[in-house]
Length: 78
Image (tube, one colour):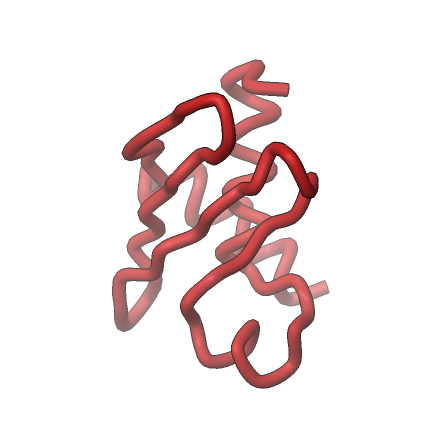
């Protein structure tokens, strides 16, 4: 639950931006509470990845990925 709350806050505060999009991937920057994180959405595999410690260690959806999903939905990227 905390991940969703944090993700919504990151989007609301304008801390998510789309940096690059091509036919294969979308690259995002998420300004977290302490660090800047980079999220990639692979269109072919329909998968997200993040460079944060949570995702790297657990391979589970983090608040940064959730924020990008909300950002995409709000901006009609899907």
